[in-house]
Image (cartoon, rainbow, N blue to C red; front, side):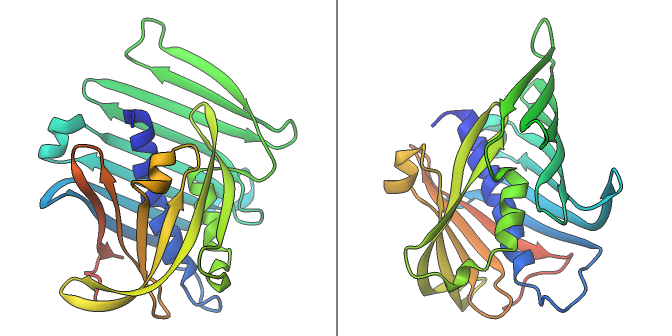
Amino acid sequence: MNLKFSKFILLVTLFLSHALYAQSNDPNKPENKNESLKYKLKLGWFTIGSGEVTIDNSSNWKGAPCYKVGVYAETLGLGNWLGSLDDHYTSIIDKRTLKPMYNEKNVASGSSTWEQWTNFDYDSMIVNVKVLDHKRDEPNRSWRVQLEKDTQDVLGTFMYFKHYNWFGLNHGDSVMLTTHYEDKLYKVGVRYMGQEILEFNGRNVGAYRLHLLLPENEKLKKERPVEIWISSDKNQYPLLIQTKLPFLGKGRVELVELNNREPLF
């Protein structure tokens, strides 16, 4: 698995965790203005990274009500030896349509940095991408990607899942979308895999088990699925995400903080 695709998987799992948490809120309860979820990324017993997802529910973009969703991810300790990561992502998503309107990112990997600005034009069905890549002699680049129906960016994909009542589906059922990431469109989805008891923070917790679907990578589907557990109570909090990494063992993303508090179940 190449580094670019591995980073895509990490971001997808972080974004999905936020979407599942947000979807579980009481629909009659007013949205919090700001939300925050924090994670630790582990390899075996070692913590190699951390991530935080924030959401502003009261933003506006060009006069339209929108969600402003941010993600910050970094490597720690051993993670810096495996591959330094210090990334910031922001997406603006239309509240009315749940379509992405704009996103930007600032990525640092080792000594190189990468900045990107993306605009979604639904009149022409084109994604316009501009990049400042500091490791190149000519750092300014741009490209276009043709949109398909229901195309999202990574955050828009899971804001869509947030509003989709897929928990009524049967075991093995799945929901798929097309997701734009850098210079490609990917098929991304979720499959419901049933209910089980999970040990979390020293407690036995009832949980739903889900599989992240990335059809372009057969090993993730068959040999190393990305598995996701969320609590099966009315809150449906994300608890754990894990997958087997080639030559490295089991990688885990664990929820450690919800809105500045320790998650208790």
